[in-house]
Amino acid sequence: MDIRQLRYFIAIAEQGTISKAAEYLHMAQPPLSRQLKMMEDELGVVLFERNKKKKVTLTAQGELFLKKARKIVYSMEDAIHEIKEFSEEISGTLSIGSTIYCAPILLSALTEFRKKHSHVKFNIWEGNSAHLMTLLNNRQIDVAITGGPFPKKDIKVKSLYTDPCVLVVPKEYKIDEKEISIQTLSDIPLVLLRPTEGVGLFDQIVDTFQQLELTPNILCECHDSAMLLSLVRKGFGATILPLSMVNHRLTKEFKKISIQDDPWISDPSLVWRSNSYLSAATKEFLKFFEEQSNYTDY
Image 1 (cartoon, rainbow, N blue to C red):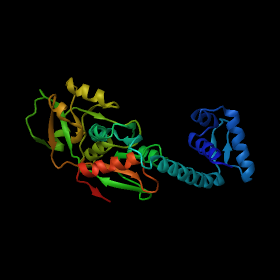
Image 2: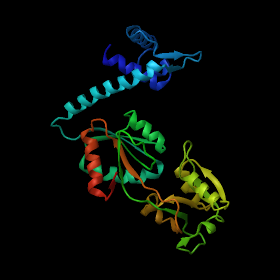
Image 3: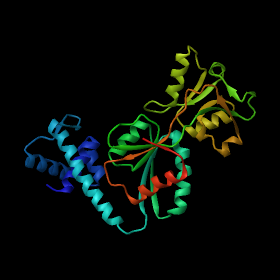
Image 4: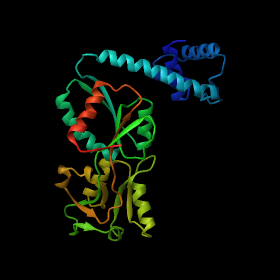
């Protein structure tokens, strides 16, 4: 059994079917099936249960073998990356994940980071916090910028700063208050961004209104941030966003109003694996944040 076969096994486990794994590995399905059969014969165990829909599920032995296989493959990949980067300039591809609310933080960081490291390429992922943690654990991304909660094992977290929410309305909106209460907020037509999966700010907003026995006037649930701002711009309603998303350009078109006793303050954080080799590009990206901001390590 060799590293190549271990990679085949991991791909099948992660993709859920042999056909999807073959497509992911850019190979034909029959050879991949033969490789899996050879592995099972060599080990003397069944690694996957097959069903009529051609989906595969790891057996108990398969679950154990997956943990060991990942450890071996990841250790080999770490060694290869470390040797290749020895005495070389910072280059390669940096894979970063971000929630939609942390995207402005990432964009600002990448703009400055690229000025110093023009040889680095980027692979950007977007998703909710749970999805980003899965990508991080599976080594599909090197670092994530997201809110919690976070797993307590095998990761490091650096809190960047606190990010309050604000009410965002068009410039011509007839509201003069610099701060608004949640009671008053319940009467304003709202256009809120709602994730397609998982929980997020939308759920926090609804929960807060329910706890205060108020009914929010949610006119529209939107699943696209660009459409969200277009609807607000057209006077469809107001929205609630983290302050970091309301950049200088947006303040020319919208008014931002503080929320009294803001219950939706978030803590965007930088998250990365603590149990694997960090590429030179990843180390430099983390160093960049250390130099640019006052964050808390925990």
